[in-house]
Image 1: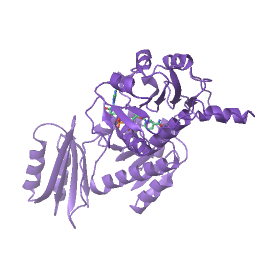
Image 2 (image 1 turned 120 degrees about the vertical axis):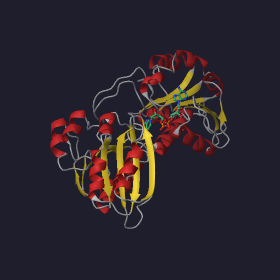
Image 3 (image 1 turned 90 degrees about the vertical axis):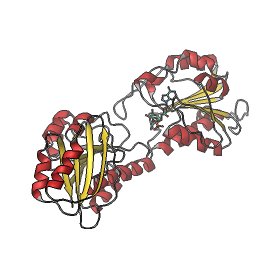
Image 4 (image 1 turned 60 degrees about the horizontal axis):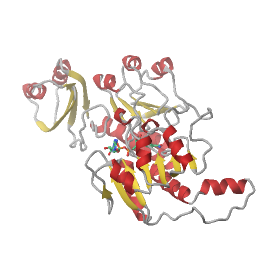
Length: 398
Ligand SMILES: NC(=O)c1ccc[n+]([C@@H]2O[C@H](COP(=O)([O-])OP(=O)(O)OC[C@H]3O[C@@H](n4cnc5c(N)ncnc54)[C@H](O)[C@@H]3O)[C@@H](O)[C@H]2O)c1
């Protein structure tokens, strides 16, 4: 089988796929639609990052494609429903850069509490500003985490290790880690915390959810961080609160509109304000995260091809599968999720005298995925399964 890895994916991914027996071609850049269609001829799996778009046209023309690996977090660049309708599994790396974001948040909380950017700026300008006023330890301070998912909950653990008292608010009912205190409302958190940090997801309902009213509810002289999504915060309101001194410092990594390319110019109402740390969406950008993304996504692709495992696929029903029993064969059958498909599959197998050794089914929206282990499988049974009107994709492994 052949894998094409685009956009300088970490070499770890290539080594995992080679070891699994793939022929691997790597390219440094992204490809536009026509280049991609050409490059995908004869390719079984493609790996990409955020700059390669898998459009419905690409999917239509890439007839041999079995799986797509998004070696990043987001999957907006991929026509996921069309891929599922063609039986093409898609995987991404939702957790690999969690720790990197957490470490940046911690670094920024300390940097703001010690006013490091101001001290650094003064000394670079030749001014020796040795002064303890306005500089604080973070030990014992109250940290308010809004959004207690993968990142928020890990930040909770690391922050507690540094002696912060953690409060969190999440719209879902989340398990409190360590000694963290769950707040019943966002206002309760804002009235309590001395540092407020946002780690909510990018659902459309979160657009502008943190604005003038929320800043007004925060304690005077508190610190604010946003490393989640740019569009969730009203940055003009943040600017006013920083200039008035109500908010003592801010660290912002994400913006409503961000330049597409490295080196492009950028502007924000937050520029030029003291004790404000601005970073170009680098929360998850570390070499460790890139390596883990390479490992994570390549392993998912390998396990899908080798075993049919769809755990954490972003567009197919999820099934976690062990290796095949020795010498047996595995039928992976992706189908339209209509009543009676499983009965039909089993009746075809029974009609050919095939004994089922193991079987698992899961569904997701319009698709169903049934995986059946058998000792032997006549070609006529495979042909009959393929011809079922509900069949989207059938693979026989082994
Ligand atoms: N800065 C970076 O480089 C970087 C890197 C990775 C992720 N992110 C962003 O960080 C954010 C968090 O990522 P994650 O992996 O922890 O996501 P996640 O989906 O695991 O967690 C998000 C949590 O926020 C909660 N939530 C959503 N809306 C809320 C609201 N209005 N109020 C309170 N809780 C709310 C959800 O219930 C969920 O528990 C995402 O927006 C992601 O895009 C940024």
